[in-house]
Image (tube, rainbow, N blue to C red):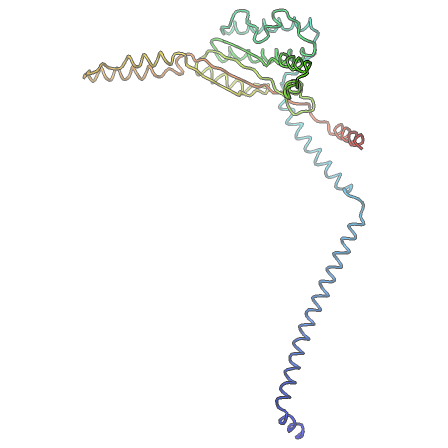
Length: 332
């Protein structure tokens, strides 16, 4: 034992070096152990992920039957919501109607006469023998058979619009025009027959705007001008908003035809230069202000444009699915 102690004292620095080497080896070993454990854990996780990926690759081709079933349920719910909204929008819409040419001429004459009788009964003045945009056919011209369904539709819409004019106390109907789709289509066909490129909106717009078909909606455009008091104009706008037939007012222009006269009258009512009577000044000032306030007291001229919408038929979920399968099969 003494010899060992003497040996250690003799080689003190060697002993310290060996001790430090053991300590370093122990630290490196513990660090290496920790790294190896972490490597083994990450390797296990990697192998698990690879096994999961291989399992997914070995599954049948997507989409799965369960996913298809869930998507069909969602589509059915969405279709039900659409059909519910569509039912509210189409509750009282006017649709095109097939007629023979002779039958249309009788229907047109009777409808225009009912409109005139309704306006006369409601004390709404209008031009004598006015035809409300149907002058061509009121004069005896026979429409093309392809145009009759939409013309019938426009006649019915015109009657519904004119029915509310007396209710709103409109004084005078100045003009009433419809979208003359048949003229635009005839022009487009004539241009196409001469070898010109047809308008991208004329023929296509005629079919899409008159018949919704598979589209969400179509519309009819009408313009009218009339004379009425301000309160009657507001009442008429409210009545358009309340119509069961889906109607949107797209443009309103109000003109006071007596504005210049009122301005002149108010200018003439100013007190003379140098007048000092306070009572006269007050009376003149009140008269001037009263002359300037004419809107609501006098009749105004109104130009109005409206769009009447038609919405497509509801979606049959089963028929839609069958049509989709047939289209996919034909494309393949």
